Image (spheres, rainbow, N blue to C red):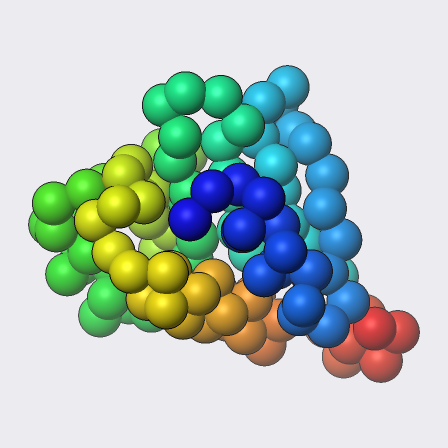
Length: 112
């Protein structure tokens, strides 16, 4: 998936905002909390939150590494988007969205 494909998919999710952070990363948020980050420059990479069990498995899978600065929060970095299918990537993005959304305070959820 290319950045435009990721953008299109993320924007289909309810109440998603996007922003460019750190000069070259496209960040997608729910309730001002990031759930997906895509690099806008080479080497292309995409980071997202996963479950605890998936974190250990994916961190040891070819094409994935623990996400720099965010691994302690169970984020992984997919270094090569060709290592998984479009459907798998959409699954992980949607799951990340749901994991982050589930931790939002009720006050913020009610405003979404």
